[in-house]
Image 1: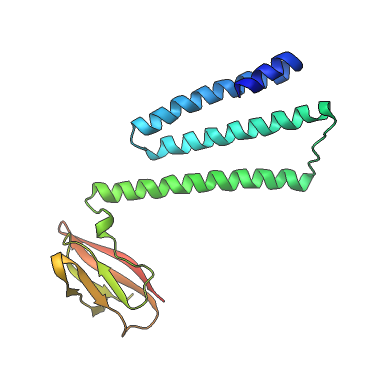
Image 2: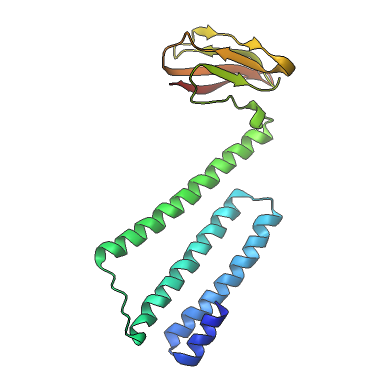
Length: 192
C-alpha cells in the first residue's frame, strides 16, 4: 500500500488520487491499530465486526483506485451495470455474514457466562438415533414433544454423561428440557 502511495505521488499527481491514497494509508494504520485492540480485548464481538468492515472498505477503496487509473495504461476495465450491482450485493452479503457471525459469538459468550460451555450443548443436533449430553451441569433431563409430554429420559453413562436412545421416535422436532441452576431451560432438537 505504501508503494502504491509513492507510485501515485510520482506518476499521477492528481489531487483526488493522492487524496484516496492518503485515505487508504490512514485507514490501513487505523486497521492495524484496531486489530491490536481486537486481540487485546479477547475478541470482543463488536470490535471484530468493525475490524472486518474496515478491511472491506479498504478493499473497496483499492479496487476503486485500480479502476480509476486503469485507462491511463490503455486497459479500461469494463464494468457493466449488472457487474456493478453484483459487487455491491457481494459486499452487502459479506457484511451481513460478518454481522451474523459476531451475533452468534455474542450469544455463545452469553451462554458461557451463564456457565453453559460447549459441554452443555447436546450433540449431535440434528440427530438420527442417539443424543449425548456431556457433563453433569444440569438435572431433570428429558425429551418432550411440542405439547410438553415427556417422551424419553436418559440413561446415565460414565462421569455424568447421559444418552438418549431415540430410535423409537419418528422424525420431527422435539425439545430437551433440563434444569440448570434451579432454572428450567429448553433446547430445540431435530430428528432426521
